[in-house]
Image (cartoon, rainbow, N blue to C red; front, side):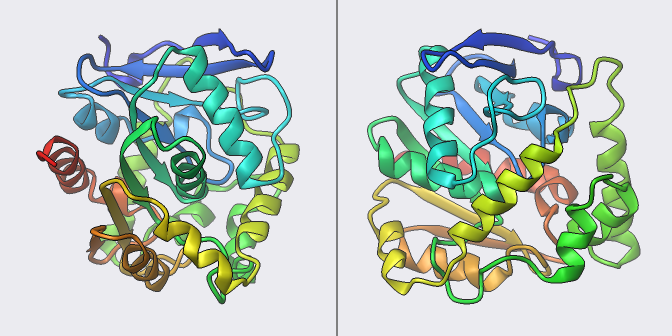
Length: 280
């Protein structure tokens, strides 16, 4: 299998009629399916992280409906996005998987685990929060201005994904360099995807404490992780989520913001691998 930076884009048509774009690396074990962040496509996964995760297992990254190189239209709710992800998983004949959801993808991963619990063996939730958590309704203006404009600028993304320390900022610049060094990039996400996905983020964050009980229904091993300075999904929401799920593990990475898993890719990959390989 090639490294992620050389893995070709493959396509599969699901039962919903949508042709999904995906990449995969690694072999063996229970497949690990990656669910990405707001406006992210296949190129927004750090190859260094994916390669480390794929050292002992098959890893699948994909563009959900309407995103990047996939067909269809991006839905405006997490629940619909989860149904689309399940269509892709079914099209690949995956009947048992581990999930790693990042940011918006972590909301989707929670819903997949609730909709089809028999599919998910273990769950990794990076920069995550439970649905309905108080104070989660939308992002601060400077955050959405940085990542939500019609044109995405690397400099403003760095402000959200990394801290102001020289070490964090340097790690972010290196991660971006690894992500966007390909000669066959994925199709950029559209404005329709941006609008629909932020609708989904805001809907998930509408305050409703009764919805916190949903997370407690996840009864599989869960690893929750975040950076200590994440401005998009504040660390307190990761603490809340881990407290709602019986037996969930929690790690907060130092001097790190939303992109902690890329900044600390070596440590995070070790932590995830240890979690996935640990006997239950």
